[in-house]
Image 1: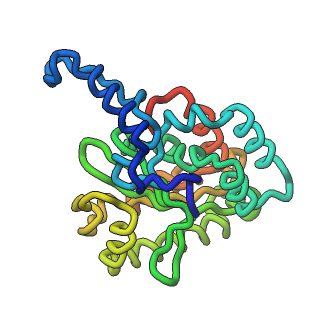
Image 2: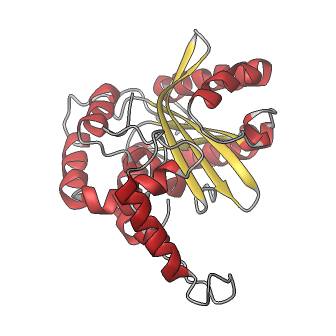
Length: 267
């Protein structure tokens, strides 16, 4: 699935390059010296920001998102969809795709407490793990410690979420079983992803994309609504996060995080 109509792997136009160079001159008013440099990244042409990133066609730039989308309308439609009795995960995925509302899955970084997107953020929808598995989304974020990876599974918002005692129902158990399989695949076949990474970048791959590091791998299962969660459910959520790097979210977590995206400068 492509995120953008334009192929940002291609060079920006001469006009865009000229605009970029003009902004760079304003960034360095003292004859180009770094001392006293002003950060005007938000004024770089959109194509330049993407092209300069590690994965140009998967780069999630909040500047572009704010300029191109009506957050309030899309979020309201998302909330209304969640409250539709017949809603299921494929309808939610379709809503995100049809509206190009990819900031919604990116909001998982905030909803799940992942402090990894403040330097760079990338989104890979329908991310394949070999021939057997496919994550609904892969989120890649960079912070001062390097790149980390969040593999996301959307499940049903309404059916078999938790049992009466708050333990996990079939929907969450199914999602957890799925992401555990992804984790085992990554541990044994991580190097198989290098061809994909290399096809989608113009730069040398950082080490995090070459060598498997379990501490950099995170998994998220989204299912149910806030009203489904009980005290025992929240206790189990803490255990899965602490012991298995699996974060359990409900769709109200995701909706609320999506509503806050407009307040931020980065994902």
